[in-house]
Length: 170
Image 1 (cartoon, rainbow, N blue to C red):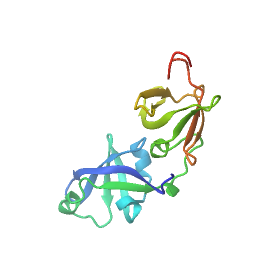
Image 2: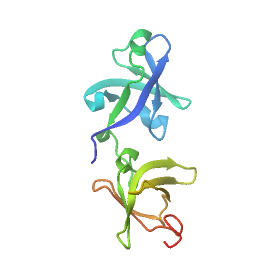
Image 3: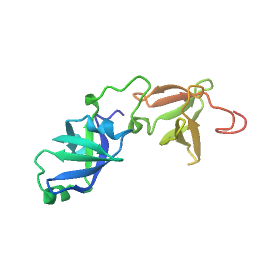
């Protein structure tokens, strides 16, 4: 199911004395995070205006109405959410949260291998961790030769497995 709001980061501390917070971003880059003018608390229920900037692998954010270190400290551990309507993804790019739980199916035989339980960001390409009904885990490289179609709305990823991914017989 496609959720309208997605987790984008977690407030992990304060920065300075004027109410800024340090945020651990849960997105591809700190620059992606920094494009938002409005983020949300409470799974999208409570909007808050924000200005932010990358700082190393973190984000320094100023939240509207948070003007002291004491107010900022009260937010430690809170999750920040984004509205998916605020971003237009390029074709073939997906939110990890939308991929999790998708059924992985052989494009030729319709055999179901399991569900995507994790997405690993490897240097060359992403890798889907697929967990089957017996809780066995398999690694599927996200490359054009293997991943043939992705339909996050229907929750289906069709693949043409390489030999050895699921067994030596594939």
